[in-house]
Length: 289
Ligand SMILES: [Fe+2]
Image 1 (spheres, rainbow, N blue to C red):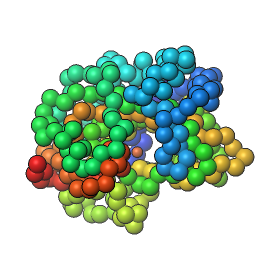
Image 2 (image 1 turned 135 degrees about the vertical axis):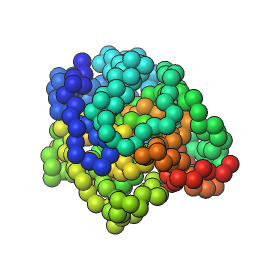
Image 3 (image 1 turned 135 degrees about the horizontal axis):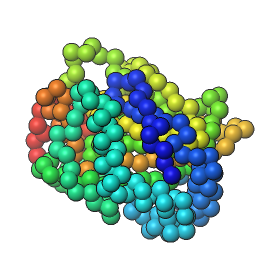
Image 4 (image 1 turned 60 degrees about the horizontal axis):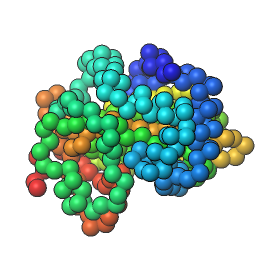
């Protein structure tokens, strides 16, 4: 169903793979229909993205009633497919310097990143302070965005290893909604800290992808994997249907860059928010608990 052999390396400062026509047009169309037919969505984020998230009651109902979505979900939610992705990255980016220090052995099918609002101390408690022997799980959502949707440059959750996007609609360039990949402007020898939400003037654009039906993007969620989405203008064009997912650990990922370890430091806040809104800085020092 998924032609992952079509994934090719994109020149970037972190590992990114992109493939056109990984999913056939007919499958994309069925998926759009299935998402359109969903009676309810779990949440709306980022100014116009409605999601059906793995782990919700709604998601289970959706998967039960949606044949092709179920097929895709089952494929991604398996240890064998995770291993395939891990292997592709290992083979294609042999000389890449970023490595995950603690490789997971157990794939947990039923686990998902909680969508509850937490403050930073609650989040730290959940993640624990022993980063060894992590387990890996799939997070996935079936999404549709309307006009106004955008994402400022960021890096994903500190638990994530690989992220992926599957575009189901063709969006004309003038309508925006493109996935943008950024690079930190700093000199190569000053790689000491990686904030989750860098200021826009600290970044430069490396690449932009206009969503195309059937295109799949995979990228490694390294500390410098800065990406965002330009504002989507819904005018004479379809809604932006897509799937977003990741393989995530049940603990923070410790990244190894040329034998230097980078640990995530969660920024303290009393404000309760989703894990995806929490700020964290990757530093070479071990965080205090
Ligand atoms: Fe992201």
